[in-house]
Amino acid sequence: MRQMVMMTAVLSTLALLGACGPSTPPPPKPEIKVQGEAQKQLASASEMNRVIGLKRAIHDSGHYCKRIIGSNALAPWKNLQAWQADCDDGKSWTVFVAANGVAQVSSCDDAKELKLPLCRAPAKDVDAGKKTAGTKPAA
Image (cartoon, rainbow, N blue to C red; front, top):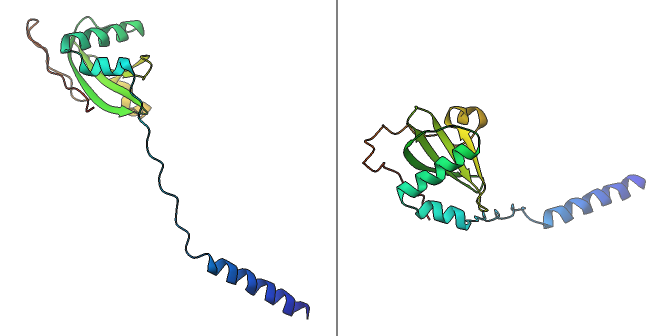
């Protein structure tokens, strides 16, 4: 008798589980992108003004760059806008800009080890009177 009750309970549980149907995973949550005023200004700035902003971020972080010879937008990283700045001494930096305008600077040499966006090949030095080629991120 006890086995019969146990068997009925097991079959009832299986019947209930079978009635639920196949479970479907919840839809993915939409990615929220926040863009602050400082990020918008940097993205829309002229090459000269962008270079000034990037150079200031590099110097404020305690690093040295006498002259930036090129800058490029990199893929965003964890809701941070990323820019590459190539200096005339051969050193390249990644400048990460948060929505609140705070910047963090990392050497492009360390990007792979730190699992950060990889930098592009450094820009070639150009005449001081010419504008350096740069790209703007997609809005």
